[in-house]
Each structure stands twice: as structure tokens, then as C-alpha cells.
Length: 139
Image (cartoon, rainbow, N blue to C red; front, side, top):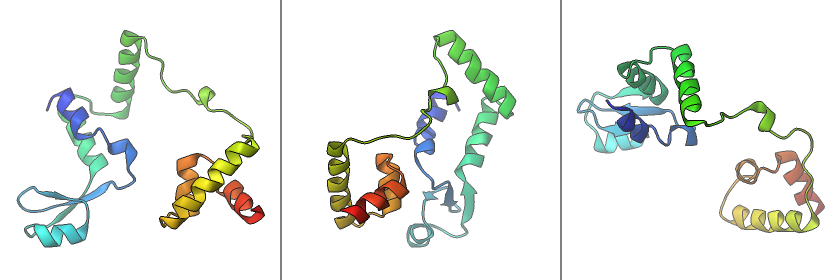
């Protein structure tokens, strides 16, 4: 496996919470047990995509978290890129203008009609669950 193949294979890994998948006897991958039973061939093996990614990194010569960290540091040095730092995360309370609050509440009503939960909507917008709950209660 090349680095490019690794990047293509795992490009969306950090965007999902679903890290477990099923693989059938023929190597077909399914992301739900229902799909595996409908379309797959028995037997099924449950796998963790993070473990699979670590195995693939091993094929690329990166055997440990320390080696991965050194590799990332070296790439950042070579390309002059700055890594993410905890210092860039703002601390303290976020304040919202009345226009922002109104827009968020309007978006919430639309999301609620689509069946979204307050928790999911909060994650998407960056408004804390408690703040959203308070605004809805006040409205």
C-alpha cells in the first residue's frame, strides 16, 4: 500500500463515529449487520476500522504512535505547516447577537421538522446543548 492509497482509503475516518464494520468471507465490506446479512456471504467478521488503519500504517513502516508523531512533526517541518494547538481553541463563553440567536432558532425549527435531535443540532452549530435548550424554552 502506498501513502496515497492509505489517504484515499481512510480519508473520511475522522468524520465518522462508526468505526466497526462487517466483512464477509469474500472480503466485501458492510457498515451494518443488516446489509451484511442481505448482501454478504457467511461467515462474517466484525472489524474495527481504526485497527485496520493501524495495520496498514504498519505496512507503510509506521509501527507505533511515537513513530507516527515523529513522522507528522517532520512533515510539518518540511512543509512549514503548523499543527493544531490547544492554544487555538478559544476559552470562555461565546456570546451571540440577537440576529444570530434568531437565525439559529429558525434553523432549529427546520431541523426539528426534519427529525434532528437537539444534541445533533448543537454539535452541528457549535451552540451548547444547554444554551439551545434555554433559547427554545424562552421562545
